[in-house]
Length: 453
Image (cartoon, rainbow, N blue to C red; front, side):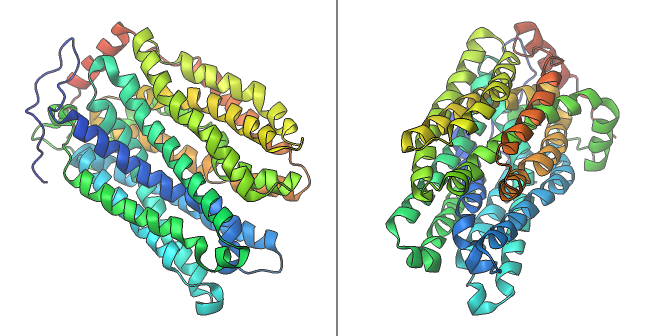
């Protein structure tokens, strides 16, 4: 194990865990790396309608699109396996090491996709390479989310955990914004022939370059003092950590899973909403992407603002409850409204969805981190989060496309509402970790975590 450059750990006190003197650098490294992960992840879904016929030729454009989304879903299917297997390694060997490996794999996957020749050039090797790339990215994404959440929260002072935790989803939102902007630019600048021939590849290659930058930054970052304080020199095996998690934290796993489940709406809004509008109303894809960019600006603002407010109020769980309630109430009328013509109608729909999604996702990473002691924190979040993301997030655009193809586009809204409503019921059982007494309990749990044999 490499030597960490963080400050020597001391026991937790009333002010929370000790943080590194290089907190800002670590914060940037965690945020930039997370941005890279999700930029590379989202750009695939946004440009699937463009490259699907080049890589997955079929008898119809819709069949090619379904094949592209099936390949997209493969990455999600790999994520829970990666989350279950690799997350305990982050609890054993440290968050920084796993995060460095994760961003490396995501960059490699993006470069494979961007540089793979078309089906006409290399035949079935083209879709096979795409599957390989998505598997690599699935492993990376399955390692990233929970490790980044733990990394950011554990570097935060106790009274800034809501804000620091929100930076993970702010980075994800910013990645969605930049990816959507990149897709909007290439679909607007290039002619249809040039776009299909090579234009769609540019955002993927840029993503690979971003990955190299993220790799360098993470390799130079510090391990979290909280991880070092809990683990010390005694390193329990990854298997024993997973056994402890499954034996002693059933309720927390369910709650963490419910916190992640509205990702079905996030992935629908992020990767399929522009295509949904294109397929159901005939709107130009470049225009819908541009409208989504405007909505995503609001998301990037709402997420850290909500995290900041949660710290000021000393409350956490009210925010995912508000966000989930907004989704249940708004999603059906928003998709109905989209049937009306006009660029600004689409923009208003996209922006409204992103606001309630932002309120939901701002604080849930911090809540997930505070549900588990540090010794099994990454394992706990990873087990719950990645399984749910695979089931609901990865299949979201595929199911949405199937509903549209069957002539039932409003079932997209119904499906999202049902999943979110079930999650909302679980939110009512969450502990309030944002109160001072709640944070004291979290700190005590971390300090008293038993080194597993």
